[in-house]
Image (cartoon, rainbow, N blue to C red; front, top):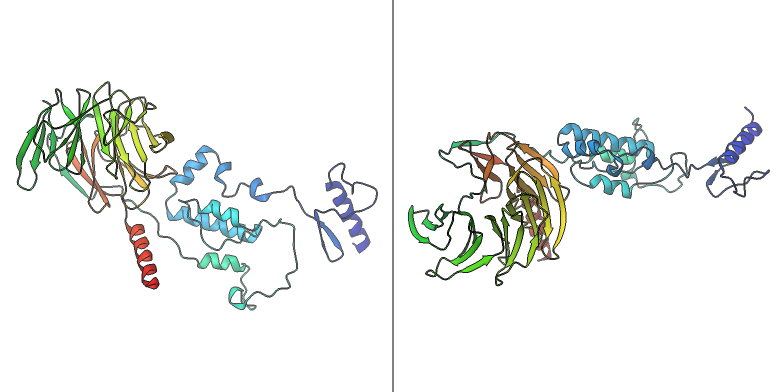
Amino acid sequence: MDQDYERRLLRQINHQNVPEGHPSKSGYAACSPGMVKSGDRFIPTRAGSNWSINFHYANENCWSPNQNQRAKDASTDTGKDAVAYAALLRNELLGAGIETVPDPHTDDRRHTILTQNTHSLFRYTIHTKRVPFDNEISPYSLSPLSNKSHKLLRSPRKPARKISKIPFKVLDAPELQDDFYLNLGSLVAVGTHKGFVQIWDAAGGRKLTSLEGHSARVGALAWNGEQLSSGSRDRVILQRDVRTPPPVERRLQGHRQEVCGLKWSPDHQHLASGGNDNKLLVWNSSSLLPVQQYSDHLAAVKAIAWSPHQHGLLASGGGTADRCLRFWNTLTGQALQSTDTGSQVCNLAWSKHANELVSTHGYSQNQILVWKYPSLTQVAKLTGHSYRVLYLAVSPDGEAIVTGAGDETLRFWNVFSKTRCTKESKSVLNLFTRIR
């Protein structure tokens, strides 16, 4: 093919690709702004072909719900290999310029896409500026990969997050009650069916005192320093200082049915209460009336947890007819997020070291779920209890949890990790050491 024929053919292709009404759609050939001149040839730039959108690569907004769920559940090395392979292809075919392997469990992929090179697939340029030798491939290398891809392959791999699916210890707990409205007292506080609140010396194994005031069973207890709040079937919340003799107390009345959940905020300023009336109330430390009321749940609210990482963030879970995990900004009174867990929510607890929380469930799956916030990605699903998982406590070091159920067993699980927190602490310590 001679050069004149080739030029005429290229002009014809360019002419056909120019939209109607464009000045170059005339009888003579014109160089449009969308063309790049390289040598004596005009090569069209496919301005309308956004390959990152057309092929939906690593873009969660373009995936179907099923694809999104599969991506959220990917926690194995196979998933990471797939992400690395996809990044390598984008480097070689699309010039993405990715140098590190994105983490499939975080939003690093989205950040990578926003910072990548957006040159068209058909555009080429002649580089005249020399790149420093330590960043380039040896001229004698036989590898077909680019510099960025070599850096990608040499980047350190983040260790896979593994949560054991089986408990590391199982204990028999005879006569552990299968009652949704009961909560185990915090160390030395015990509520009884007759409405008494007993204070026990756990070390000595003896009862110190028995507090009166409720006219029905006490199923919810929450400590706030030396103050103890108790919620009862009589719909009343009593707050008492265990150092002072009775009957000094505060009576909080706002629920229309049994109070089944109580939790104090980490700053000791607000008390959250859940009731069988499907209400979630927030009280401050001085008022006798609730300062906030949330009515989105469709069943009893027993599971309540304040975030230790974000001031004013409150999580709650609904019963069998609701099954939803909901989050609230108590500073503004706004509802934030919600997700259907598929089962009755019995308990909630936040991790001390990471922005994660664990929920335990009853009807119908009796499962234990670990969530990442705020993405609400399921990190793990633990099964083993044959009855509702009504009891939950976190170990003092924040790494393990213990769960109890009506199957009369206590199961211990390694769920959370403080590795990330330890690394952050070491980084801060090193920073201050350098400053000093």
